[in-house]
Image (cartoon, rainbow, N blue to C red; front, side):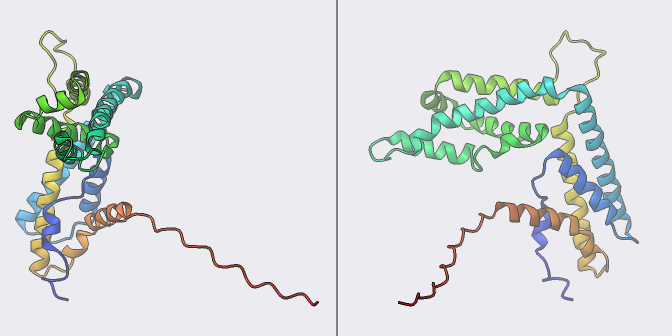
Length: 258
């Protein structure tokens, strides 16, 4: 076997974009598939993957216990609606002729940058959705896009977006409680940070496996299988459904005798 060219080395410097339960599952599967006879640096990365995956799992469990579904749903729905409303106000501008309406070009640019995959991120697990929404809000702030969004979409919709994002951050434990709250209350786990650490540990482990594979370790390539499986399933899910085939023509009818 050609150990250099049989797979894409760069594919393992990232992980498939997964929600928290799937990230936990991937970490567990990678640990279960880990090869034997690892060098010290690989053992270190394996222990880190185990620790960070366990921390994410415990944080996710605590988040479910601390925030029952009925209490989380109104915040999740409010945040979803704020993004849907903003996109719904922005979209009509993208349908206009740019030569006659200069705002059409601006709207198209904003839509591409804020909604590269549409609104699919609003269906992710809570922590993952907060992380996806956060980078969009940071982009708006860092590049001074808020005035244009307010002009095109209206103050009320931008205000709603900002309001519900703050509430969402409190819900997932990504925003510190305000002073004066009960100091004895158990803090909510920061799922976004726990997920980030688990992803980094996964990448570090994958890089170790790639190095072992290139060095000739007989089990390292197979140990990357769980990541390959998730990536393949995501690729299969993103492909458009095949177009329906035309029905076959009816068989010829026998001629009746005159």
